[in-house]
Image 1 (tube, one colour):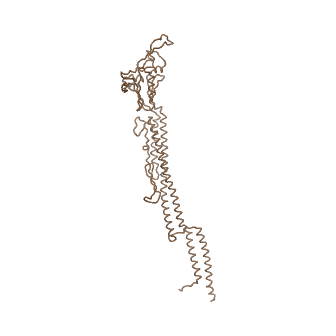
Image 2: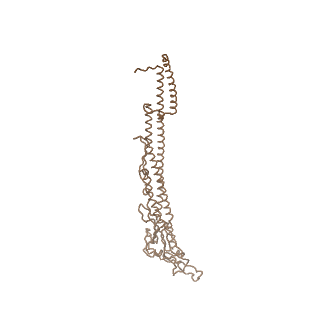
Image 3: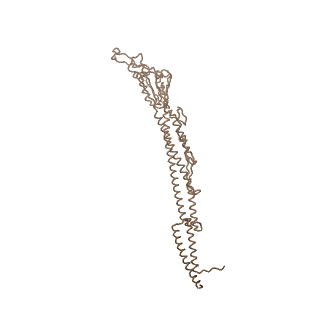
Length: 449
């Protein structure tokens, strides 16, 4: 087949039209894909740079899921600490309620003897209370008295003021004494041979661990100032060493209190309210353990001693950035909260709810527990703030990387649209020029017409 010969003008216009069509195709492809660099052929530098930026953005996006889970895990633990704090406050209220019932818990030694009974040998001198208070403990003290207004014949006679109780006198080299013990506190006071019941009451009241009084019925009552079991013994102290020896005489405590015990009388307090609070306290205590076990998220419990590891970047080795959070193991036992019991001799992990000292110790311990929980909550809050900051940073970094990558490869639709319009115009002009160039060839044909 013979080659078709085109004139130079036609060939040039045809070439221009082909170039315009090729450029139109390229721009139409950019508008269709939205990218001006679709492969390494278009622009190898921009293409591979964009690929690297998008790859890093994708890796950071994958890390955002782990960061988000880490935030939820910390928040779950934080809410658990807040709830445990409320339980501890409820425990404090229970202890306060027990402490408010202290009056019902005081040990009381209630005498059954009527110390104000009138001795037949002595005429009455006042009511039972007055008679009891003025009776001597040992022997019968006599006092000369003037004639009474109602009986002038009594002038000059000697009569005991109010008689005596018959407590035995101390042996030679000893002094009569009373010893009071409450818990580990012991108080001993001595009294003379002429001491009265009033002196005994004042001596007990001066101990600070018990209060004594005589009622209108003439009976002596001794009440402890604390919750510890109270013991009172009558005896004597050696003048040389001060050592106390309980009296073996049955009359000493029997005549004072009516007790059959030859050496001491004792009493322990008991509060029904406090007894009823044992279950309430222990139920609240058990809830602390249960709540701590339920404070996990996605299999990790920071209140159960688990460790949470959150990775912040895509690097490895020394350049890897992560945060390891070691959670505490929170239980009532680990917090130092003892179990409540209604026993006089609790174990090391228990406390006697009837004992004031134990209640005070538990109250102080609960205050310390709240301080510890607040410290844990503060630490979790600080760690949560770090993770949330890194989450925001990572999101912004992903956005920066994506935008940077897009600027390298994405097409400007406005610009590409304007170019396409210009190419369409050029195409039309090229077609017109081609038509004009072809008209010269048509003039030659007319010569043969």
